[in-house]
Image: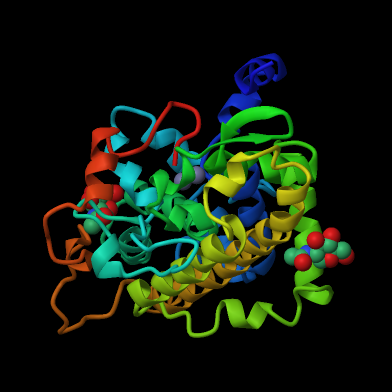
Length: 350
Ligand SMILES: *[C@@H]1O[C@H](CO)[C@@H](O)[C@H](O)[C@H]1NC(C)=O
Ligand SMILES: *[C@@H]1O[C@H](CO)[C@@H](O)[C@H](O)[C@H]1NC(C)=O
Ligand SMILES: [Zn+2]
Ligand SMILES: [Zn+2]
């Protein structure tokens, strides 16, 4: 039975689960972040504004899943006609040379249409900008919550074979591609499902590891130097960190070695700890990032009613000043463009 057939039997919930870090991964990142936002940040995001106590917050969602509920919106949006332009923002195609050489170079790798790193800069600016409409701020938040997750998935920081989408492999008896295994099938194998309740319990486990388990000594390092005043540098560090695993964990012996047998259980066992680590990192970073945005822009606005007068020139709200200089597209970028900016088939995209 093909993967598709299995998905069809399981139902629609699983079809939508086959997305960048699947719904499971993104929701888990979101739940972990919810654990680390301050109560002020949470109020701003959910339903209370210090300046307008009765107004709806950015999301107008008082549930316990206010970030998890929107964590995969960006994947659904880019599948729509209106949202197609945003497909390149889900990744940065590092044109390095795994497994011998892994690295990310923002000026080399971020295409003219933008990438995950420029998107982080754009939406960090927009979510904190008091001049934008509520709808624009909400859109910015939904993108941010998603892209912090995408940046931690090693194959979202790699150009080779379009981020592994074209590396056909066998996983646990199914034919699929390496990218989809990292996004969805390895996480779901670990957790046993792809629903929000699975994400919540995985998040609780990982928060436990961060608080007092085998991740507790590392967590401070994941956000060390994070600076919302220099998003490109910060997000490039996150991308480089994840990209390094392409050489060390994702394909340490090259592509052919992944295609000589079932990736389950040996490859899975070698990789799943990195999947857990990257999801934990994404959640911890996202919580901290939202707190920093709150402190730097929202808290100040609440005190003064409006953003203080400033002599600084008005920033380019379109974010175009964050993009690297325009240049002729590389071969990897042309390959992407040929696939409509996204990737391969409708289900396992990048
Ligand atoms: C942390 O330890 C648990 C067992 O307590 C293990 O299942 C998990 O894979 C470890 N996580 C990482 C990221 O090493
Ligand atoms: C910034 O976000 C806005 C709104 O989504 C979008 O129109 C614009 O193209 C983005 N700019 C960049 C450089 O990504
Ligand atoms: Zn993906
Ligand atoms: Zn994505």
